[in-house]
Amino acid sequence: MRVLLTTWGSRGDVEPLVALAVAVRGLGGEVVVCAPPDEEFATLLDRVGVPLVPLGPTVRSVVAGPKPPTAQDAFRLAPELVAARFAVLGSAAEGCDVVLATGLLPVGARDVAEKLGIRYVYAGFHVFGLPSRHFAPGARPGTPSAPDETDLRVRWEQDARRVDDLYGPALAHHRAAIGLPPVAGVRDHVFTDRPWVAADPVLCPAEGVTELDVVQTGAWVLPDERPLPDDLAAFLDAGAPPVYVGFGSMAAYAPPDIARVAVESARALGRRVVLARGWAGLSAVDDGDDCFVVGEVNQQALFRRVAAVVHHGGAGTTTTAARAGAPQVVAPRIADQPYWAARVAELGIGTAHEGGTPTVDSLTAALTTALSPGTSARAEAVATTIRVDGAEVAAKMLLDPNP
Image (cartoon, rainbow, N blue to C red; front, top):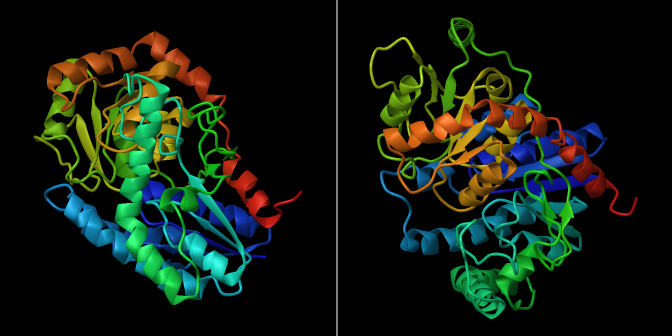
């Protein structure tokens, strides 16, 4: 059986798909992966022996500028990605039995599958984007999002119209070009009535969140057996566990001056720091020997050796830290990140940084909570409940939809 997996998004959108590709291949299936042509994604796929079929522009070229993308940028990118999916997936999916799409709303993937007469699956890495009676689109979890159910329904209808405005014209054009009729409601068309949620049920419970028939597989985690670099291992061995600080693919969205704030906060608590460079290019603030800067590294191994993880609240980082039993401080920036911050706080495995930009005082306070014995004990306890078989579960369902 041949499976096409596709995404467009940051590392947190690509690495889970690589994990699923490995699981599909391990069960005897063939796999094709269409993803953004960023060099690090090609390297990631090369590590597991799966070639990258380039899809759309690089993600860095879109998000790593000095300022966050604007609404005008979104209206330029949306039709470009729709066109890319029809062109690239239309060719790559030939001979495939199923298309699974995820990442930034994958408009066009279902339509290619429809044209070829093969199965289509939409998968997301959280529940926050699914129509729900529990939260409003764009609202920060943990805060009142709407006064009543009627207002929630109106907001979700507005969200559907926004998606139609963004993607509708391009989708209609490309469907017509391959002989398919128009669709009513782009968002619901992409999600289907039975979306998959590739997230751990403890960290991100999906049951009852939406009226859709959600299938929760567990998170898709790519095992990482790479050793830590010798100099990093030596730094870790030289003292008490440090605090890890990283904001992943947040470039223009990273908090201003976060490297200095984080280092000063850690020092205030007598802690050393491992600072992840990330797409924001974070760097050491002085020549102190209590700060070590890393690039791309095995987080699964590293997080088992740190006292706490300060991060932006991406699904992958949250799950990796939770699996490692590392207390977390989540300073959310965009999208689903406030949801993960709220879940970390609700579970007692860390704290959500309140407010906007972290200051030395606010981050020190959040770290104090995260480093407390109670939070550490709770993080270690929850770690034992996190599932590790999500990718295999999903792979089996792709290869045998009616077991």
